[in-house]
Length: 239
Image 1 (cartoon, one colour):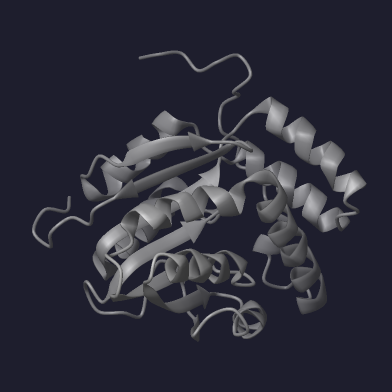
Image 2 (cartoon, rainbow, N blue to C red):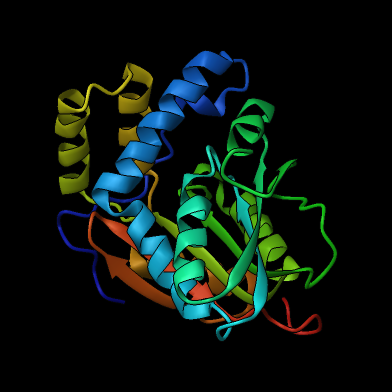
């Protein structure tokens, strides 16, 4: 096994403030706006869009996209623009466990659903593309396996997971940028915790292989991002 670089520490399960459902909706909304800005400035949005573009159908077709843990729906909204430029009509479903965020996402998605990522309220192969961005690191390994299996079950064409690539440099960069951009203190705390809970390319590949028995295409992206994409397994091939 190849040793991890010295600047990549072992994954740490630091609790995030927004994981506590008792946090007020005003703080949740403010922090998610910080996350959306971070995605736009530091590559989170771009990493997902690159993967979505490769999964789009030929020009003139319509597709469905489910974004799990959609937050404000900023990334699927950008995906709609990518699809339109490719001549594809994209019907977007945003799903979030927080009802306040689902409500806010309505301006960016065609349908907003309040539901648990570990129990997606859709039939098998119901959606063409299923995505999640900066969501998977919130779960313990066993829970993450369930989320990945649910995404794999619902998707018919492609599953795309995008997350933070763990690095001490990413921690330092986020900490400094959070002051320059005047992030809320909760955003600063949770941003650092998220990076420490993030993935290496091999770690994300191993998780997905364990969950669905599929070897994903894993890519590193600028801004300390990592994506994994794969074609969903057939119903009889899952572990």
